[in-house]
Amino acid sequence: MACLHLIGCFECCIKCLGGIPYASLIATILLYAGVALFCGCGHEALSGTVNILQTYFEMTRSAGDVIDAFTLIDIFKYVIYGVAAAFFVYGILLMVEGFFTTGAIKDLYGDFKITTCGRCVSAWFIMLTYIFMLAWLGVTAFTSLPVYMYFNLWTICRNATVVDGANLCLDLRQYGIVTIGEEKKVCTSSESFIKMCDSNELNMTFHLFIVALAGAGAAVIAMVHYLMVLSANWAYVKDACRMQKYEDIKSKEEQELHDIHSTRSKERLNAYT
Image (cartoon, rainbow, N blue to C red; front, side):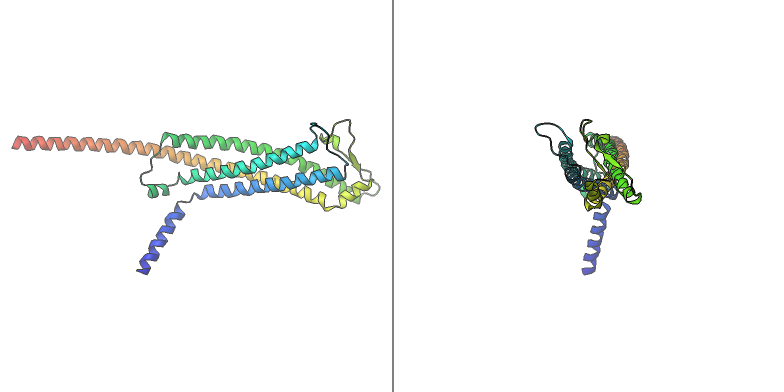
């Protein structure tokens, strides 16, 4: 009895494992990892940028409702909060969609009936995922800008220690962080520049932006993976619809043949009687 019980548990586990949409699961894990890296590291990198601008570039927040660099950074932080929440929910929805398009649902719930609503939902997810993929491509391109800026700053710090007597400057106006009328720059001859290059804050913020860029790239790959999975699910749903129509027509024809055969048999029996 114990052996039969273990065999039954093993078969149940195999059936449960067979019902897991592994392709959707991999894409979901990749999406969550990418979004977590982008949101977490991006948020901390923006906070580090605020400290660097205030400490070494002597920038202050503008009074009133003027939109300055600090206001934009605060907006980006709120956008990060929204992205984290939205894609957490979207990943769950895609996983649920993956579960309901696997063959194991047939065994769990009997006949698998594909409705018009189900096909519309699959098509809607494909379109939405494609739009999100384009959005993440834009986010990846946008995230590369601070990486480029910090790379230039890191290069200036490195060249200042290698080349003696070199007077290199970094002007924030060339990146559009401040207006043309404001002169916010640091040069290698200034004390604030030396402190900034020696601090761990600059190096940490630079690497946080790099990790955030990698997270955005991972989210793009996850969206591409989702597109492949959803396209395969759509093809499965389409074939299932055709098979379902074929089975319905076949069952109807068999029933008609059975009715005709029963009618003829009764007519022969009545005639014989």
